[in-house]
Length: 606
Ligand code: AGP
Image 1 (cartoon, rainbow, N blue to C red):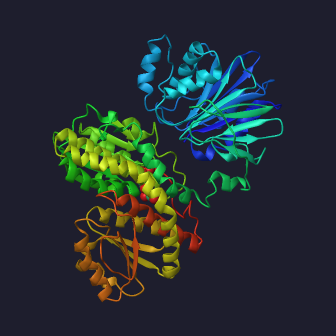
Image 2: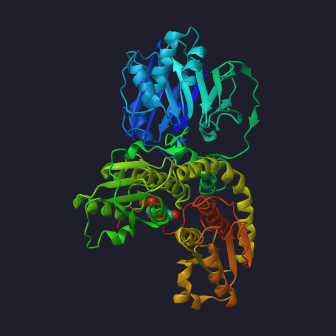
Image 3: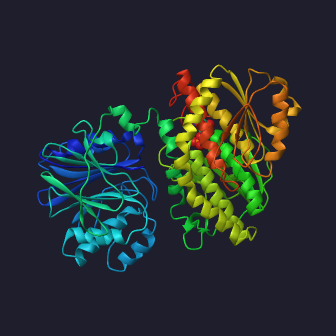
């Protein structure tokens, strides 16, 4: 996600903005910039790249400015370059603005504004806000009214900070679905997306809520309800975290924070991709791209498991032949591509060497490549014919969690979208799945704390175990593989993921009381088939941890029920359960959860 900092007070603003932005670097970014009021005009200094490059540009430009805004950008629309970096201004440079979020109707607004003479200089959705507020100032007397009117036109999420050339010292801000909070100093005011940016100056904060508009200056602040325009009283909170805890939002590890971010990730992934009235999928990124007859999915690790999972959806809904390959194998196969083939490269980082090599091999054979990435402007994104961004925000922990959730969400949308294009899914199925998908974040939000408690209880029972089986059928087999990968990569315990039906072909020889088995079997058509596998394990004195859902009257040594959801949405509850078990085991064993031994976040070598 992007990072915002704003300051108004009695001290030079540039060093404060730079310090605040550096404290937000951990969130991940690809460009940065600042704007400040100086001698009756607005100075805007911004740059693609890292903070040290911005600092070099600002060297020697220390000046009397004591109020301004700053931003680190995590690109969602438009490549990471100087033009697309924030702050953005209107044509007359009467205002400068920074933004965190996604403006879903930015294209419609841009056209409307261009028809009224506004000229755009970037590819971002954010720049629309600058011109919209400027248009508001033309139509309204008061800045407050101009801002409120402009934000009334917007669909999507935003946290913004705005300064006006004719109002030095005053900072306006607004929040809708993206975090924003004020820091209350002694005769100085701060605003940021996250606490670490100003924690060194004050621990007194005011959290802003959706639909609120703020006017602040050194001597004070006022929050308004942007709908009713009425002033609102706000509570001041005291932060007692240290800086490291603040970077993790109060969570002990980035991995746990990112597991709990998954409901929000699903929401962000759906933004601009659902026709709210028809409950239909919209995927402008792949419009005009022919629907393939055969799809070759190429990926590594967790992304590979997301591909295995999605294979079932493409087969069920889109009636497409699907092959899923581990990229390091795919790149050395002697493949024959056919007309109407397509290659889908799934990668969080967009820089995994094996996946990139697989993509290049497909392109050499003139096969269209669709990239599914989380990092805008990454190598895979740039080299794909089309790219679908998972919009999960930066994933800091080496163990991939929310990225897989966003990949599964994106792939589910793609399977429904292609199914409608091929006429292989009917409207009612799409409407049903989309309706439940929109409710899914709320279900997960409510379930995660209980899941964490169950995981902690299970870890106390199995903390001595040095081996685990993870079994599942159908798309649950891919989740079994993912559960095993999570456990082994962060707790260093040996874990095998297997198709449940495969146990009798050899692996069952390993079963004994010291080798517990996780069976992933939420209610679905294949669950009854998994019953025999549970019996096989129990009959050999193996213990079974059954991850299931209430309607299945199964048994095992330990039963863990997750919310019962329509196929395939149960997978979105299975995934965090498996992630939390691995996380709690790693915490119990004292391993380095966010930076496990021998691992890198992005494997950019063969
Ligand atoms: C997952 O927890 C691992 N960190 C690893 O398997 C990862 O999924 C794999 O390296 C692929 O990375 P990518 O999605 O960035 O291509």
